[in-house]
Length: 215
Ligand SMILES: C[S@@+](CC[C@H](N)C(=O)[O-])C[C@H]1O[C@@H](n2cnc3c(N)ncnc32)[C@H](O)[C@@H]1O
Image (cartoon, rainbow, N blue to C red; front, side, top):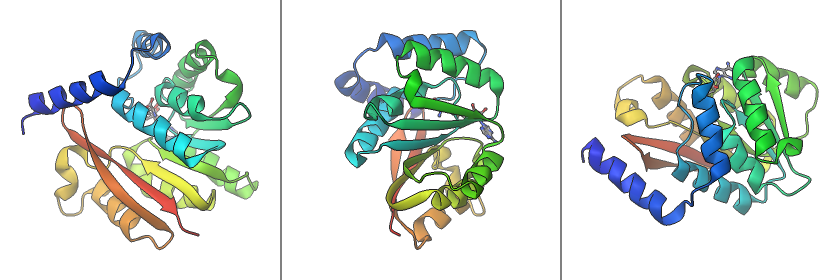
Protein backbone atom coordinates (compact mmCIF):
# COMPACT_ATOMS: atom_id res chain seq x y z
CA UNK A 1 0.00 0.00 0.00
CA UNK A 2 1.47 3.38 -0.92
CA UNK A 3 1.60 6.32 1.48
CA UNK A 4 -0.98 8.29 -0.49
CA UNK A 5 -3.54 5.52 -0.10
CA UNK A 6 -2.76 5.26 3.63
CA UNK A 7 -3.32 9.00 4.01
CA UNK A 8 -6.63 8.76 2.12
CA UNK A 9 -7.85 5.91 4.35
CA UNK A 10 -6.86 7.90 7.45
CA UNK A 11 -8.75 10.93 6.09
CA UNK A 12 -11.74 8.70 5.30
CA UNK A 13 -11.93 7.45 8.91
CA UNK A 14 -11.46 11.01 10.17
CA UNK A 15 -14.30 12.19 7.93
CA UNK A 16 -16.60 9.57 9.42
CA UNK A 17 -15.74 9.84 13.10
CA UNK A 18 -14.05 13.15 13.92
CA UNK A 19 -16.03 16.38 13.98
CA UNK A 20 -14.38 19.72 13.27
CA UNK A 21 -13.37 21.33 16.55
CA UNK A 22 -12.42 25.04 16.65
CA UNK A 23 -10.62 24.69 20.01
CA UNK A 24 -8.38 21.89 18.72
CA UNK A 25 -7.79 23.71 15.42
CA UNK A 26 -6.78 26.86 17.32
CA UNK A 27 -4.44 24.81 19.53
CA UNK A 28 -2.71 23.44 16.44
CA UNK A 29 -2.57 26.85 14.79
CA UNK A 30 -1.05 28.54 17.85
CA UNK A 31 1.45 25.71 18.32
CA UNK A 32 2.55 26.08 14.71
CA UNK A 33 2.78 29.88 14.95
CA UNK A 34 4.90 29.51 18.08
CA UNK A 35 7.33 27.33 16.09
CA UNK A 36 6.57 24.05 17.87
CA UNK A 37 7.25 20.90 15.81
CA UNK A 38 4.13 19.36 14.27
CA UNK A 39 4.57 15.98 15.94
CA UNK A 40 1.33 15.73 17.87
CA UNK A 41 -1.03 12.76 17.62
CA UNK A 42 -3.46 12.66 14.69
CA UNK A 43 -7.17 13.57 15.02
CA UNK A 44 -8.11 9.88 14.75
CA UNK A 45 -5.68 9.02 17.52
CA UNK A 46 -7.14 11.81 19.61
CA UNK A 47 -10.56 10.21 19.22
CA UNK A 48 -9.13 6.80 20.13
CA UNK A 49 -7.36 8.15 23.23
CA UNK A 50 -10.45 9.99 24.44
CA UNK A 51 -12.54 6.85 24.02
CA UNK A 52 -9.98 4.72 25.87
CA UNK A 53 -9.79 7.23 28.71
CA UNK A 54 -13.59 7.33 28.96
CA UNK A 55 -13.92 3.54 28.78
CA UNK A 56 -11.35 3.09 31.53
CA UNK A 57 -13.20 5.61 33.72
CA UNK A 58 -9.89 7.36 34.36
CA UNK A 59 -9.86 10.08 37.05
CA UNK A 60 -6.07 10.56 37.07
CA UNK A 61 -4.14 10.60 33.80
CA UNK A 62 -0.38 10.92 33.38
CA UNK A 63 0.96 12.17 30.05
CA UNK A 64 4.68 12.08 29.25
CA UNK A 65 5.28 14.67 26.48
CA UNK A 66 2.91 17.67 26.46
CA UNK A 67 4.04 19.62 23.35
CA UNK A 68 1.29 22.21 22.69
CA UNK A 69 -1.40 20.30 24.60
CA UNK A 70 -3.23 18.73 21.65
CA UNK A 71 -3.42 15.19 23.09
CA UNK A 72 -3.81 16.70 26.56
CA UNK A 73 -7.04 18.44 25.54
CA UNK A 74 -8.47 15.07 24.44
CA UNK A 75 -7.50 13.47 27.75
CA UNK A 76 -8.75 16.33 29.90
CA UNK A 77 -12.10 16.27 28.11
CA UNK A 78 -12.45 12.58 29.01
CA UNK A 79 -11.95 13.28 32.72
CA UNK A 80 -14.77 13.84 35.19
CA UNK A 81 -15.03 17.36 36.69
CA UNK A 82 -12.80 16.42 39.63
CA UNK A 83 -10.31 14.51 37.44
CA UNK A 84 -6.65 15.44 36.92
CA UNK A 85 -4.24 15.32 34.01
CA UNK A 86 -0.58 15.57 35.00
CA UNK A 87 1.43 16.32 31.86
CA UNK A 88 5.24 16.27 31.79
CA UNK A 89 7.26 18.43 29.40
CA UNK A 90 10.96 19.21 29.06
CA UNK A 91 10.66 22.47 27.15
CA UNK A 92 9.21 25.51 28.97
CA UNK A 93 8.37 27.08 25.59
CA UNK A 94 6.14 24.10 24.75
CA UNK A 95 4.58 24.18 28.21
CA UNK A 96 3.76 27.88 27.82
CA UNK A 97 1.91 27.29 24.55
CA UNK A 98 0.11 24.29 26.10
CA UNK A 99 -1.03 26.35 29.11
CA UNK A 100 -2.69 28.87 26.80
CA UNK A 101 -4.29 26.09 24.76
CA UNK A 102 -5.62 24.40 27.93
CA UNK A 103 -6.99 27.73 29.11
CA UNK A 104 -8.85 28.37 25.85
CA UNK A 105 -10.19 24.79 25.93
CA UNK A 106 -11.68 25.52 29.36
CA UNK A 107 -9.93 22.58 31.02
CA UNK A 108 -7.04 24.45 32.68
CA UNK A 109 -8.20 23.60 36.23
CA UNK A 110 -7.92 19.88 35.51
CA UNK A 111 -4.38 20.06 34.13
CA UNK A 112 -1.03 20.32 35.83
CA UNK A 113 2.04 20.69 33.61
CA UNK A 114 5.33 19.76 35.28
CA UNK A 115 8.36 21.11 33.42
CA UNK A 116 11.69 19.26 33.38
CA UNK A 117 13.22 16.02 32.17
CA UNK A 118 10.30 13.61 32.62
CA UNK A 119 12.63 10.86 33.86
CA UNK A 120 13.68 13.05 36.79
CA UNK A 121 10.13 14.29 37.37
CA UNK A 122 8.83 10.70 37.43
CA UNK A 123 11.56 9.55 39.81
CA UNK A 124 10.59 12.41 42.14
CA UNK A 125 6.94 11.43 41.89
CA UNK A 126 7.76 7.82 42.82
CA UNK A 127 9.94 8.96 45.76
CA UNK A 128 7.26 11.31 47.05
CA UNK A 129 4.55 8.65 46.93
CA UNK A 130 2.46 10.32 44.21
CA UNK A 131 -1.08 8.98 44.03
CA UNK A 132 -1.33 6.22 41.39
CA UNK A 133 -2.66 6.94 37.91
CA UNK A 134 -5.52 5.25 36.05
CA UNK A 135 -4.04 5.89 32.60
CA UNK A 136 -0.51 6.69 31.41
CA UNK A 137 0.33 7.99 27.92
CA UNK A 138 4.00 7.76 26.89
CA UNK A 139 4.81 10.19 24.05
CA UNK A 140 8.16 11.90 24.76
CA UNK A 141 11.61 11.17 23.25
CA UNK A 142 11.69 7.63 21.93
CA UNK A 143 15.06 6.71 23.51
CA UNK A 144 13.45 7.13 26.93
CA UNK A 145 10.55 4.74 26.42
CA UNK A 146 12.00 1.78 28.39
CA UNK A 147 12.72 4.03 31.37
CA UNK A 148 9.30 5.66 31.04
CA UNK A 149 7.67 2.24 31.09
CA UNK A 150 9.52 1.19 34.26
CA UNK A 151 8.69 4.42 36.06
CA UNK A 152 5.08 4.43 34.82
CA UNK A 153 4.62 0.97 36.28
CA UNK A 154 5.75 2.29 39.65
CA UNK A 155 2.98 4.88 39.43
CA UNK A 156 0.33 2.36 38.30
CA UNK A 157 -2.18 0.13 40.07
CA UNK A 158 -3.81 -3.10 38.89
CA UNK A 159 -6.11 -2.04 36.03
CA UNK A 160 -4.13 1.04 34.98
CA UNK A 161 -4.04 1.48 31.22
CA UNK A 162 -0.61 2.21 29.73
CA UNK A 163 -0.48 3.55 26.17
CA UNK A 164 2.70 4.32 24.20
CA UNK A 165 2.71 6.18 20.88
CA UNK A 166 4.83 5.69 17.74
CA UNK A 167 5.76 2.08 18.33
CA UNK A 168 5.73 0.92 14.68
CA UNK A 169 7.51 3.87 13.06
CA UNK A 170 6.98 2.98 9.42
CA UNK A 171 8.07 -0.60 10.07
CA UNK A 172 11.58 0.23 11.32
CA UNK A 173 10.75 -1.90 14.36
CA UNK A 174 11.10 -4.95 12.13
CA UNK A 175 14.87 -4.37 11.96
CA UNK A 176 16.96 -6.38 14.39
CA UNK A 177 18.03 -4.34 17.45
CA UNK A 178 15.75 -1.39 16.72
CA UNK A 179 15.30 0.75 19.83
CA UNK A 180 11.50 0.81 19.60
CA UNK A 181 11.52 -2.88 18.73
CA UNK A 182 13.30 -3.52 22.05
CA UNK A 183 10.61 -1.48 23.81
CA UNK A 184 7.87 -3.50 22.10
CA UNK A 185 9.47 -6.77 23.17
CA UNK A 186 9.63 -5.57 26.77
CA UNK A 187 6.04 -4.32 26.56
CA UNK A 188 4.80 -7.63 25.14
CA UNK A 189 6.67 -9.92 27.52
CA UNK A 190 6.34 -7.91 30.76
CA UNK A 191 4.65 -10.05 33.40
CA UNK A 192 2.73 -7.04 34.76
CA UNK A 193 1.28 -6.12 31.35
CA UNK A 194 -1.45 -7.62 29.20
CA UNK A 195 -1.48 -5.72 25.93
CA UNK A 196 -1.46 -5.38 22.18
CA UNK A 197 -0.15 -3.06 19.49
CA UNK A 198 -2.71 -1.37 17.30
CA UNK A 199 -1.17 -0.33 13.95
CA UNK A 200 -2.43 3.09 12.83
CA UNK A 201 -2.31 4.88 9.50
CA UNK A 202 -1.36 8.43 8.82
CA UNK A 203 0.99 9.47 6.00
CA UNK A 204 2.65 6.15 6.74
CA UNK A 205 2.15 3.32 9.20
CA UNK A 206 2.68 3.77 12.90
CA UNK A 207 0.99 2.34 15.95
CA UNK A 208 0.11 2.54 19.62
CA UNK A 209 0.93 -0.03 22.26
CA UNK A 210 -1.90 -0.49 24.77
CA UNK A 211 -1.81 -2.58 27.92
CA UNK A 212 -3.68 -3.13 31.15
CA UNK A 213 -1.52 -3.44 34.25
CA UNK A 214 -2.24 -6.86 35.77
CA UNK A 215 -0.86 -6.32 39.28
C1 LIG B 1 5.65 13.89 20.32
S1 LIG B 1 5.69 15.30 21.32
C2 LIG B 1 4.27 15.13 22.34
C3 LIG B 1 3.00 15.31 21.56
C4 LIG B 1 1.78 15.44 22.42
N1 LIG B 1 1.61 14.29 23.26
C5 LIG B 1 0.56 15.57 21.52
O1 LIG B 1 0.23 14.57 20.86
O2 LIG B 1 -0.04 16.66 21.49
C6 LIG B 1 6.99 14.97 22.43
C7 LIG B 1 7.19 16.03 23.49
O3 LIG B 1 8.05 15.47 24.48
C8 LIG B 1 8.92 16.46 24.94
N2 LIG B 1 10.11 15.81 25.50
C9 LIG B 1 11.21 15.35 24.83
N3 LIG B 1 12.09 14.84 25.71
C10 LIG B 1 11.55 14.97 26.94
C11 LIG B 1 11.99 14.66 28.25
N4 LIG B 1 13.16 14.10 28.47
N5 LIG B 1 11.17 14.96 29.29
C12 LIG B 1 9.95 15.55 29.05
N6 LIG B 1 9.49 15.86 27.85
C13 LIG B 1 10.28 15.59 26.80
C14 LIG B 1 9.22 17.30 23.69
O4 LIG B 1 9.70 18.58 24.08
C15 LIG B 1 7.86 17.31 23.02
O5 LIG B 1 7.13 18.44 23.41
